[in-house]
Length: 209
Image (cartoon, rainbow, N blue to C red; front, side):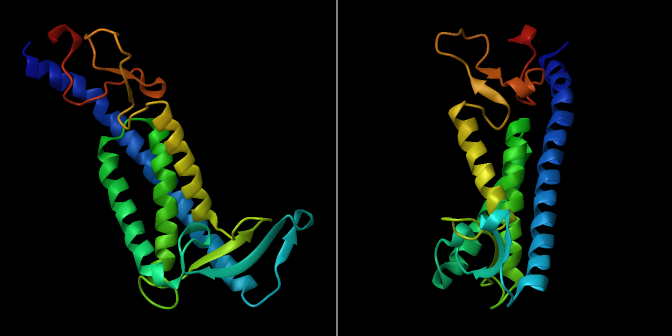
């Protein structure tokens, strides 16, 4: 059997695995986006111009504010277009990167980031005062913390997971760098969640190295 035949056979299980990871990423993003849009719509319909709703003895308050800046009210009206452009860039980057994804953990992480970025981008595009300058609806308030929304929470959770994965040296294709002095038989070692899947579509079979 030729080297090309071995490579084609090895790539077969990797493609379904990659498709499953992309499907997981998109499913999480859609859930986050739908939750964010629905909760903002309910908030605007029920709390605009009305007193805050106090829950948990006042620790949690439901309110309605408009944020021209980034997540957690960072920035102001003069930065709205800038943050809109950044959000568009993040969405495009994640969609392009998803073609390489084989890690469940990274699929969850990027799904949270994509859903959060898209949720706030929808506000930027459609809400007052105009396209790509719209103010984001924030409605969750806790003590000593800026008012935020579901999209903001999703972005923060995704960012924390990304840092953890980077610290653990888990790559987006599900592999980790081989330990120093670990031998030259393999350049990479599979991460825990993908230990039975090949890290690369074009990787040759072990007997052909």
